[in-house]
Length: 295
Image 1 (cartoon, rainbow, N blue to C red):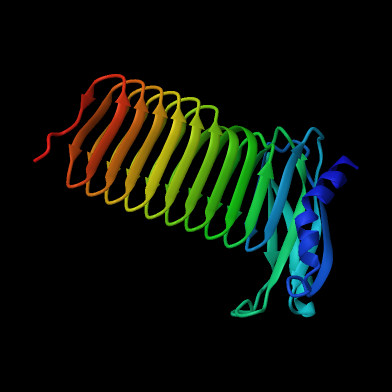
Image 2: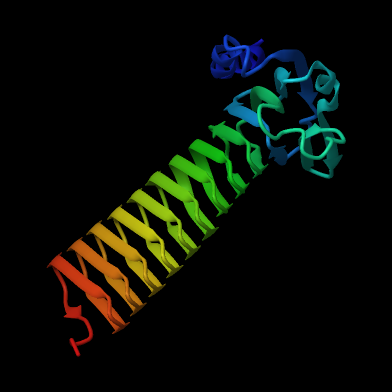
């Protein structure tokens, strides 16, 4: 019953969509009880579909929702399946043998599912052009293409790779963004460290970091970090921008190209090793300032 209540609550956005026949002209119910016994990690292959998950104190898990299609004949091809691999459970939202090109124009076929999993289970998502939301899991891993992913109240680590999609996170244990292509990442309230790999042309905003923060490289994108209790270190900035506000520790940047680097409110030292034609601005630095002299 508890799992059912969670699923019903999470399905409310889908129910609103159902009022518009253009969004779900033909539908069929879908339900699956997840084989959670002994499982430590659940991977969801979301693809183009929609998934809503909320962690609960129960030991079981289930998904339910509907298949939506512009053509009634496509409904039977929209299925959800699962398979075990040791202590990992793989769940796939799929469209079996889709003809090429059927989703052009006003044609569509998708699954809209919601449900619950145990709170002590880690979640891994693979999302293409679809969207997913996870609330309350112990850990979260994300591989995101062009879709949308939201994670809230994740007690442990969050690791992600982002293409051109949007990732929104709030209330997480620690952050590890391996790479951002042209997508957008917005993060609020990180309890531990925030580690960022490469940022291409995308945007990153992180507000509130309990530990240290680091960024390996920024291409033409923009990054903004605020409310970092520890140190902030950055490798290289190309033509993009990095803005820092309210850093408790020291700030270090190895190299600046043609972009801009700005820091307001630094509790420790402020150091830039090398710079090109870009601009450096700093204000309210408590420690020593060491930046290259203007040429």
